[in-house]
Amino acid sequence: MWLLAIGTLLVFALILATGIAVHRRREAERLSETKDRLREVSDLIRKDWRSRTRLRLALTTPPTRSVHLYDVERGLENGPFRDGWGRPFLCARPGPVHRHGWDLWSVGPNGIDEQGNGDDILVGENVADIGSPR
Image (cartoon, rainbow, N blue to C red; front, side, top):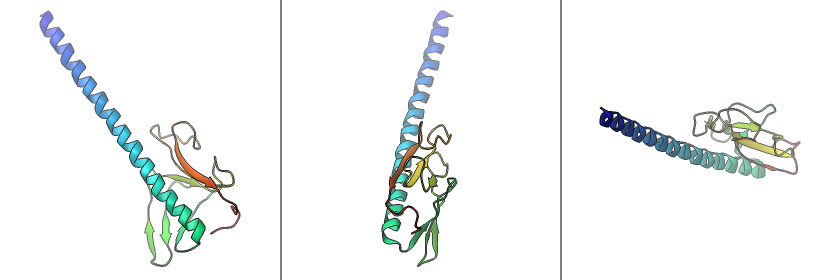
């Protein structure tokens, strides 16, 4: 009887440890995916900011709940851009961190908007002419 109970506990512990490992791996994948997407969208924002052509991004205050890019020349729209947890990116100009520029962020694993703090994942930059739309 004791042997059966110990065996059952060992099997349960093994299943639990496997589940934790799988969860941690999936969270790491989501984090990596989110960082890649943030980098991709922030590169488009930087390109648009500098070139003033083709792409238009609506950066608003308060933060938008979804980020859409619109290609003016071809009439194509991309988005909404989402993080690895399936939540839309937030975007604001001025940003909560870069008060003289823009911020793009994911609310992170906990799903709570902490304005770029806490577990939020944020990219952005200050720019010289924040007052003029591009």
